[in-house]
Image (cartoon, rainbow, N blue to C red):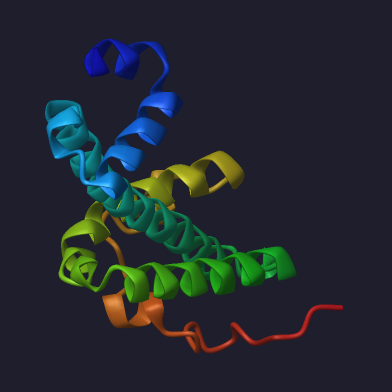
Length: 150
């Protein structure tokens, strides 16, 4: 029954599973699908971290490699992504070791953003991430990030 509800009405299935857990009705749980969904929640957190780092790295690249086109929007995106990453890591401290592992993947995402939004070409940008993890997360990097826009 639970598996068919899982496939037919996922939202209702989640409500039922939550109620079963709260009421201690463990034998009513759809354990197979519940385990799969719990595992996917962890994957979603990793994906969110990778995607936010990708956007952050992409904007750092645009900032560095298009110095005459810097905008307040880029600056605010950099600040927002750093803030969201910090919050994500505060809520999920076990993701911190994943940061070093995910930077190459995030760099590729950042490159895609740069190539979609700018006239820059592959030859204009290094083939590996030019930033350390510390630089990526440092609110004072790059040095002119606090510049004022009119």
